Image (tube, rainbow, N blue to C red; front, side, top):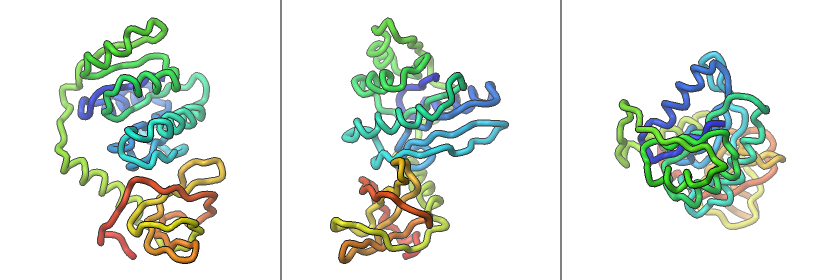
Length: 233
């Protein structure tokens, strides 16, 4: 695996897709819970013939690994274990530059190579390890800095797309819930199925708006909320 690290808006995602296009087939490990495919989650995609197909998602439950570092590291590792041995794979990360977390992430994933884009400080924090292959590269010339408002709008659009086919359903919820809060619906292996937006809670049950109609093994509260009239219910 090639693991891409660096601050936000340096072109990590663009580079990941270009490399997969060159390889023609491989896997994309989306490790950006803030600006990735679905906010609050990590995901593994298979790339083939120009298309990305979702393999599995794992719940992080926050827009950044900060404060949920252990959950984020385990989620990344569980998804990485699903990549067939010998397959080309790119790990695309968020913009967190904390060297302690990044070193733990590198140790957990054991990438064949780490490419740091646009951060000499992060490169120096990792390159002292002689058992790691770490390179430094400049940001892509076409990378554009996004505003905080653009980032919020991007996250909202992805969440609204996720809820496009959502319907209300009742699920067991033992603790008191907060209306508007998003819960992760998990399967029996602990992987993410979908989000559920809590509409109401009473007597150990919650009324959720969710696009998932199948079996749910567990509900996990997240740090995400969606108090928007744009959603039905």
